[in-house]
Length: 137
Image 1 (cartoon, rainbow, N blue to C red):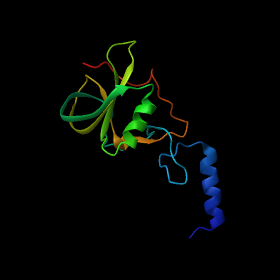
Image 2 (cartoon, one colour):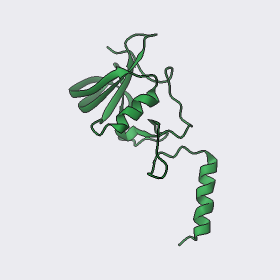
Image 3 (cartoon, one colour):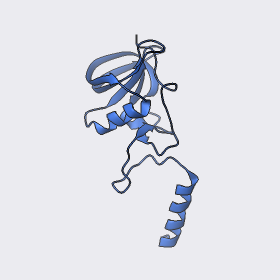
């Protein structure tokens, strides 16, 4: 079993490395969420979906950034997936949260991010207006 000192040294080294810790604990509350650097391979994280069926939309509002949208999803107990999109180039971005859905991946429509794709933003992943979203069809 490692000593307390060995654990403290490892934790300090990890913190100093700048690695984006995805897990927020009660001791270190998370204020902002974004896409994990290494999301689960089985999760839909940015895949364009050809169709969404059986969808229950719980919110569809303007959003200043992808991180704001991701944070809204995490803070909602009902959110299972989100889309961050714009109606046409140059328009405002919107955040749509779903509590129920069925996705069929293809090359068109919006990008979708399941809740498992999202983690605490410790300042290393900055996604904003230019990085995410697609034209709504």
